[in-house]
Length: 423
Image (cartoon, rainbow, N blue to C red):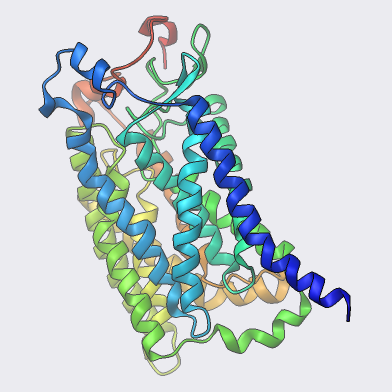
């Protein structure tokens, strides 16, 4: 019995100590390495004699606002369907995202925006950090109700680093282009790690089907398997929902559904690419919603709609076009992709989730495998297909060309674009 008070005291002190330590450490790293970029620093901006209307802030911030709402309101309330974990879903989303935004600014900065001995941040850094926080929250959905805040903080610490490593593999080794013009680049001799100042290989993942959704889902599933204990079977009744918890979850669904075109288009090149991304996401979401309602009624015994399907699978259309939305997918292609994603996601909730739990001992609390994992993989395949069908007739002069607007304005001197001719 003497050890019990000590353990209780240790648990009480663990979270405050972790929060204070991590906040102190990130603050020191910010002080040493983080600086405003040329569009944020007063001296650099005015020395360049730029027009205020040309500042990147005015083009990117509206989309950033939408993405920010998705992270803190959409994800938080979407996971509030559990009758016993409503406070945890919303509160821990707030907590995790706040830490992930700081930590990912450092990790992504070291990998993608580090030159002159400093990390240079601006509005694009906030968008990228929100995307990383989104991956962390997707993983949180797989372990919701099975972890405490201290464990979640450690999860975010590890996942943000692995998220950066995953980007490094895709960007530096496999040549996948993710976020045009936002300080994300490629490894080129003369510039060091992942420079963004040279023409990239023309493969895109603007909405993060691979880097955000697929990575976040399977990281969470692996963590769920590691945390699996046989006694968790006794608490399955706590995974149920009640009327008001489903209603709160639908609020999250609606927020995510409305703002998802901004999520996919926020990091894309200004102009026709961003316009096309929003349109393709818009149509894909409408189609996935219809297929979700159809399949949900079809697979139920009495033809009743399942709220779990409606809350989640209706959003699969936004995930599936993450890779291809910036491409010439066509409105019909967006509808087809969204319809297929809604079907796959709904069927996953109905048939595959029970198999994951019974055969693989993976308790996917929020069904992230069905909303983010499988649609993310499907989105990557759609991207490969659309890229393979690309023609000069479809893209015109934009086919295979490195646009000036894709190049960040604060690139340091280095090799010319001819250094990567042939990409």
